[in-house]
Image (cartoon, rainbow, N blue to C red; front, top):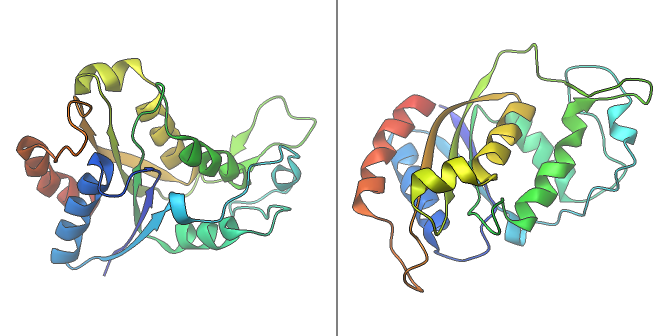
Length: 198
């Protein structure tokens, strides 16, 4: 049985990002996968201190952060999962602040001693897992995906934890109603994405 970890950086209960994640999770469970959802809006993660203590140690495994909060447990969950759904709506052209905070704490997956010019990903030479990226924006989907940084940041997160992106669910034009529902066309794409992930 595949273990899929969902990391959702949305602020809103039952917003478009939550709805999209919910549809994917339903399909995954129906396909026999075990799924755990982490809502970053409820998860205790502090800001990165940029001390780079975690980057000084060699090895393929993530290093330890000097802070003792929920991130240590979350890194363990990342390591135990077979695949991922990484989700964040677009806010001001980027992932949400809570997702960015999580993303910065992924520094434990980087080897970067002080005498090295640029960082090296710890998971660069290990077998890759798979990830689906989920996002949304007020602009038309294709414009939002190409013009904003959200998709790139979600993809960078996947790469950092050792996953290849196998699909994306990017919903556009979501700011026309205060309680918008997931468009039917987006829902149809879910089955294909789940097949790719599993």
